[in-house]
Length: 177
Image (tube, rainbow, N blue to C red; front, top):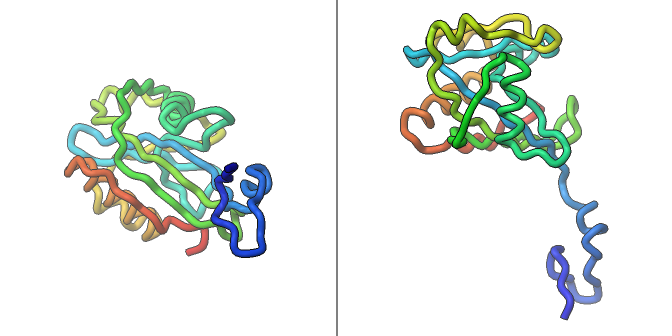
């Protein structure tokens, strides 16, 4: 008996070949990012030059072909800040968003713990000017007025995940507000 990864066929229908079945599935982009705080547990964010809707972000980005999310997070962090992150990876959150008008694909992401940076490490951050023009480290409440509510909620939940050691699932970080 030959099986296909597709759903069980209904009476009178046939299995789809894997290539055809794959075309019926939702598509998603994948990202990896790194969450840092200073030694006082104040979160670090980078201000993106390309997004007025979500200006404050963590170092990270979209995976490249054949790349896994942890490797993406490490690569993007070094490109965007000059910080070299070593493992092992510690997952703080899985983030999922449905597609919307600004982007036709779902988004699945992984937020990894980069640890606590010293004041000296923060001073040595080298931004990639084509992506970010500023970084800030602030206590959690001071981030609330600087970002959309769902971004602040994601930040709050990632900080809670770090504190408790239990990864967060953020399943409604959709493209549509």
